[in-house]
Image 1 (tube, rainbow, N blue to C red):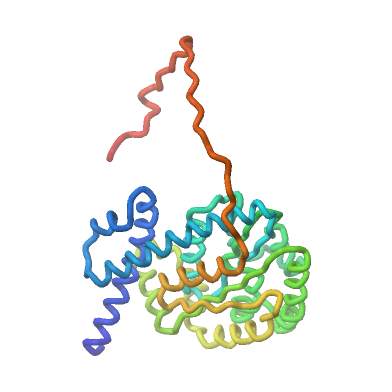
Image 2 (image 1 turned 90 degrees about the vertical axis):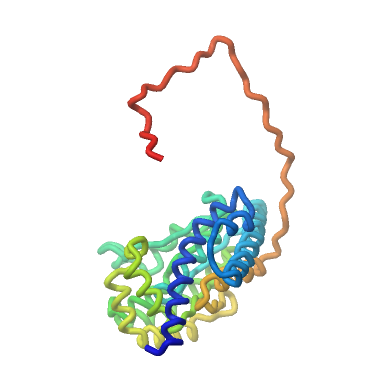
Length: 304
């Protein structure tokens, strides 16, 4: 490997590791400023400056997401957001940043496992229907009914007749959802061959991420071109006016998250919902109340 290529690879691996660290910093910054937290971090000035911009934009967008959540709840909207893309495309990271500051009773994530024997005999969309939102709810699907057009088709888990029936049915299914008052937004996270290769290597060598790799992921890597053909057919045949596809350029994870959230916010005419002023009531105290001591053997050992 040439020196420049090696340096580029080392830089990308370093960025991947930093991204994992930044996920923790995003939560840490909740009680401090981005500048305070990054002051504790070592690194090149340019890199630190870029991360600071990312943090500031992320938190600005997350504040807007809270406003969107309140508006959805008040106006009784029903929202479905689908996240699709190749393995390691960054769907989960984007979903995590969207839901990070939101109320799980309003905004929830659905990530269904492979169908069981009974579900495989049902109407294909049946197992997804119970997870659709009621009024005032947002549901994010980390992979969705489009599994049939992707992994199921490529891996041979369904027949070509099944796929053809899916392509005939899914536009009508989504139009039916929209007619019932459900807003359907579909995102495809797009990465390059080289970027997926790098992210898989990162997962292989990171004990905290190895759980993300499955035999299916490794097989999908081998079948890159088959997935490309399947994706192209899916986008062509299911891009409808009522529920269009939006492609997120996801080679740069941080830019992808910001672009996706900013675009999502633009899809709604939301506004800040005014809340009544909250006043903390004084705590009641009673002279006859005596706090009972907790037995020492019930405490968690303080090792830290």
